[in-house]
Structures are given as C-alpha cells and as structure tokens.
Image (cartoon, rainbow, N blue to C red; front, side, top):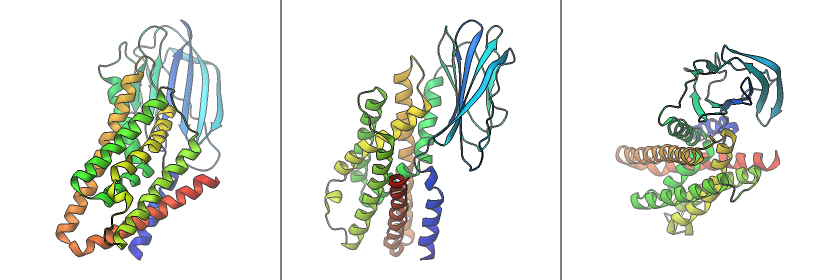
Length: 326
C-alpha cells in the first residue's frame, strides 16, 4: 500500500503538466526596412504576480514602443515595436537566462528570405542570427519539440504505458501502437491544415477518460485472469479510436508553438516523427521492464502491474475531474 501511495503522489505531483507542451517563444517579424515587431510568450510555472521578462534583441535595435503584456492561459504574452539600423544578421536574440528551464522557440521572419527557427535551451538561451537557415534547421527544431512533447506530456505517456501493459504481446503491441500512431497522425494533420477541429477543453477531458478506460480494462483483465474483453480482442481498434482524440491534443500543442511559413509540411512531419520517436522509446522501455521483471521476479509481475493500473487510473481520474470542473 505504501508503494501504491508513493506512485500515486508522484503522478499527481505532475498532474498540472498533464498535457502541457507550453514552451516559450520569441518572434521577430519585420514590418519594413527599419521596423520590426517583437512578440514573446513566457510560460507561468509558479503562482504569484507574473513578471514580464523582455527578451534580448540585436544590438542595432531598440524598443520604440512598449513593452506591453497580457495574461493568457498559463502564460504571459508580451509585445513591443522595434526600430533597427541595418540587418539583424550577426546579432543575438533570446534570453540571458531561461527562468524555470524548458525550451524557447525563436522565430525570425524577415520580409525577404526564409523564416528561421531556433530552439533555445537553458544551456543555450540565445542564438546568433545568420543570413541563411542551416540545412535541416526546421526538421531538427520541430523533431526535438515532438520528442519533448511525448516525454513531458504525462497523459499521452500514461496512455501508451497502459496500452503496452494491457496488450503485452509482441505483435499485438506493435499493431496497437501502429494504429494509435496512424490515428493521431491523421488528426494532427487534419487540424493543422484546418480540415477538422474541436475545442481544447473537451479534448483534454476525453484524453483523461481514455486513460481511465485503459486502467479499468487492465484491472478487469487481471481480475478475470486475462478474459477476452473487447479491448483485449481488438486492441488496435481501441487504440485507433483513442488515437484520433489524442491527435487533437498534439495539434493543440503544435498550434501553441506555431509553424514556420513556407515550411508547414516539413515542420508538421518533423514534429510527428519526434512524437513517434519518443513514443517508441516509451514502448521499448515498458516492454524491457516487463521482461526484466518477468525473468528476475516472476511472482511480483502481476502485483506490480496491478499497482501500476491503480496509480494510472487514479491519476487519470484526477485529471478528468479537474478538466471537467475547472
């Protein structure tokens, strides 16, 4: 019971981050030869009065108007008008320090030339602006953001974990994960291209409900000695159905990040591949742990899976209630 409580407390401590890919962003957008707009978003990770942190701008620029700020969902959004002498090439932009950790997406949109994207990190909080984007810049930036989303998005992480724990058989796991991948890829592309859409709040609640459903199925399977429920007989169908819902969650995260003009397809594909890479790492990790546990402590396998099911179910139930009433 102590182990169950510890697992539940650990997961609940991360509940506020359940589906949060809320990286900061900084955007420099050129209006004419001498004027640029500066916009940025800093996530609010701590309670209290938010403090606006103005990003670093190139040395040949000054703030002509602003800064202005407004409070958005879990973020503080700032804006300012800049007056710059000459080109921004060779200048630096970003932050002196990224408070609270996490990543920041820096985008530079000149009137002439390609939109450039830079991924800023706590170890590299600013970037040197170059004349031409490096080869593969968009692929690298959005691919890493996709990996970060699946590994930091606790609800997607728990869904994949519960799915693997429920199925556990090699080819069945592969089929279910593939169906989940295809489904959320379809939804992600559809939302990004403006073909479909759902409000964020119901989607977040449905994602939590999908995890509760898998946790209940996992407990029923263990209690019935692996009886053939619909989920266990057709795990790929259940994974596909819920994958469509999770795709709306991925799309919401990507919408907050934004896509570079002219390279929407590349950024979308890179983000999706990053999500799949992170998802594959989770699947292989869970299967490896089950294999090690089955070899070293076979008698403990069923109790451990049962404890994990309770922890996942209780955590997802908390998210469900929170997303329905807040």
